[in-house]
Length: 436
Image 1 (cartoon, rainbow, N blue to C red):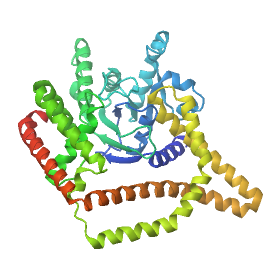
Image 2 (image 1 turned 60 degrees about the vertical axis):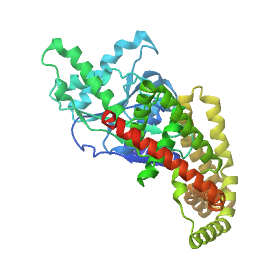
Image 3 (image 1 turned 180 degrees about the vertical axis):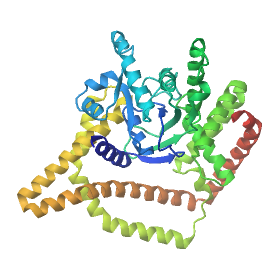
Image 4 (image 1 turned 120 degrees about the vertical axis):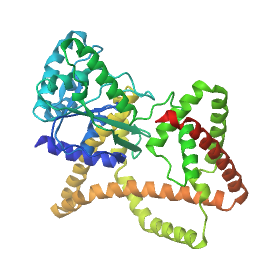
């Protein structure tokens, strides 16, 4: 019961906090399953597993979290299992035997577990070393007759600490553990290593691995230019990964060419940034009817929505700044910021709604309290939605005034984008056989 309630609440809250984009293969509804994911964002990462499966999942979490107020109670309520890490307390490592036994037991009974085999949450731009724990748990269960599959889960955050930023959740092809089982006890170490490597390869296929974060804007611009050339939508995950791998190969093998191309793309990105445009905006043809429709629609939305939005800003100012204050006070590391902000919102928002309901009941009676309680959440969602939509409309308007009325600038950027696209097409032809 508690698990279902927590899953429903957390799943809803995650959809409010982030803009989720899913590229998920069908998840087996039955049978032993291990979800393994990359780990860029603390407790948010395991919570996202709620989004991709309706199955009951046993989570493995680092032991110190079980001692944290609220979080510890939540983990115990979800029947999560503690993992004792050497960096936390070397004397507790022996307790992992019980954890591994419980995890493999859940698998033998046909259950699903989730763990993050990097062993730590981190903000590095590439996958960290994958530990052998997932492989060892899988083999332990397989020896008891369980037919285990491992599903790689890739989590890519655009700005993980920012409200309403985008998160891409991908799952890779399931790995059949039976193909890696050792034929004898002497082969087990090598078999564990082989399965761990397969898990690493599976995670690399659903994560964006970069040399450094500074490369991301350049790779995104390059991919967007190439997508524009193909007439396709930008931000395709597979294409972004191929671009990242291609840039890495180019850096290693042709550093001079890489440096020149990177400088060209960065310069093109800066020029687009001056007019707040994306490569796809260069192909937009402005028609008078569409422009007037856009202007009237947004003016109408402003006239109707702005007073409600202003009221929402006033009403929700207290929880907004309370969450920010708690995050600044508690979050000591970058990796913790999104987790603290999310959990603080889960606590502060209901308390504030309860305060508003109590105030309405005291001032105007039970009917007013029911009305306030029913309207509070939609009111808050509308306030945030209105803010985002008007920002998007403002961006479109600015692009119209800078590109729509400056044909020469638009033509120059279009020519430059086409030239870069030709370069990428040539490189893609050269490197495609090695990019998979």
